[in-house]
Length: 207
Image 1 (cartoon, one colour):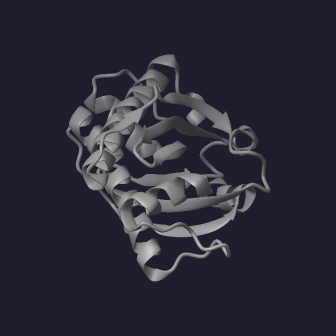
Image 2 (cartoon, rainbow, N blue to C red):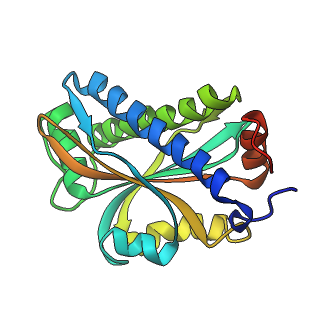
């Protein structure tokens, strides 16, 4: 049976995606610790399929300002990965990396923009490596695009892009903590249907 929408996934398929989320989050914490040269602990990730309205509420409502970083998956696995950082998390990262916080305007200067982009690269690579290590599939990530906007506006991007696949999305929520860093982290992971079939097939999971 081929996948047509996320609604075709059964409990076993969802458990596989949860495991990818768990491994990716752990890898991201380790990578972030190396980048910041300080220990970074991570809470047990919560991995669930939610509709966009539920994601909005988890993030503080549609008008909550947030930092969004969007990357595309390419290669054997295609899709989208998005990191949603509360501004206090972005401030914590910038404090650790550069000794500064976001300007009051909420706009990044060139150095801050580059620093947060690099964090997104490292974290996205952690999730991509989790998929690759588990399945043997090869995939790459694009350069992240970033904006500071309301949750509702940022979520409209994956909602439109994946409108024909599902009204639900894989939502990964955890919390990083360490020196000068203590904030929630949220990830949206969206492989397309063909990629989901490849992932399950390579893991020997019946479709």
